[in-house]
Structures are given as C-alpha cells and as structure tokens.
Amino acid sequence: MRALRVVGITEGGDVVLEDPGRRERFTVPADEQLRAASRGDLTRLGQIAIELESQLRPREIQARIRAGASVEQVASAAGVPIQKIERFAYPVLLERSRTAEVAQRAHPVRGDGPDVRTLGDVVAHTFGLRGQEYAEAEWDSWKGEDGRWLVALSWRAGRSDNRAHWTFQPGAHGGTVTSVDEHASDLVEGLPARPLRPVGPVID
Image (cartoon, rainbow, N blue to C red):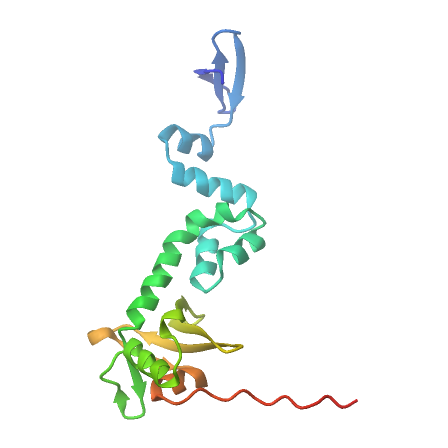
C-alpha cells in the first residue's frame, strides 16, 4: 500500500493527494466518509457503508429489529450480508433480551388484580404441573406498533410448537404483564396444556 500526502484542494472542494515517489496526484471527494476516516470514527464509517450499500438506513434497521425482526430477516430486506447488520442490531437485541428478563419479574394481571407472584414464578410452576421442562423454554420481547412491549415465551411440547404472549407495562414493584392469547392465560391460571385438535380424514 502506497502512502499519499495531502497537497491541496481543487476548486470543486476535492482533496488533492500526491504520491511523493512517483509524483502522481489523485483527488478524493471531501465527503462525510473521508471526514469520518480522518477522525478514525469506525462507527460512522460503518453507518456510511450501510447507507451506500443497503436499501435501509441504520435507524430503520434498528427499528425493524426492535419491532421483532431477526438479523437474517433485516439483512435479506436490506440486500446486504448479515455481518453488515449485526453491528447495528446488537444493542437492540440486548435491549430486547433485557426487557424479556425484566418482564419475567413483573406480576401477571388477573381478574381480581395483579398476582403477588412474578410471571417467571407462575409460568415455572405451571410447567412443573404439566411435567414440561421450563429450562428449555425461550423468552423474547419486542415493541408493538402501539409502542408497548410484547413478551413471548416459546416452547415445544411433544411435536407441538407453542407460543404465549403478554403485554408488559413497566412500573413499581416490577410492573405488570397482561395475557394476550389463550396460551398465556392458561400459563398464568395454572391450567393443563390444551389438547391438540383432532385431525379428521380428508374426504374427496
């Protein structure tokens, strides 16, 4: 790699570089990319690279991740490699993971008010009653279109993939969670797993 030195600026504002050994001169646009490089601002350089290559800006990438999209889904939509998305997705994925963790310490809302137990304790108890392995279940969270946090628990029972959803309202004493679907309600109420729907024969 040859070392160049700055020798001037053109009338159009471009930076003029010279190769001292060969006396060759080059021009480089004095744009944001050059300014970020001169500052050693790697974060801004990464943002510029995404803006040049991708159909999505970094802020849009993070908004999609916060709304529940995966890194792979956003990379596909942006038309760039996954590695280009991961830098911007990482802090948002941490936020989602942290919110899912905090929501497990919130109190499920019942008909007569919030439960004294936490969501994590209630769900673990129900899994125990069902003979299911709670440690294998996975928590996640994301922000809905209304700005509220949604919390999800995914688990497998036999051949069935299940998912329960709650809305999470942060607040004093851990906040509260409200069931969104039947799976969430059943877990909060300590009910047995719902039986699989029977599949009838197909008659032409």
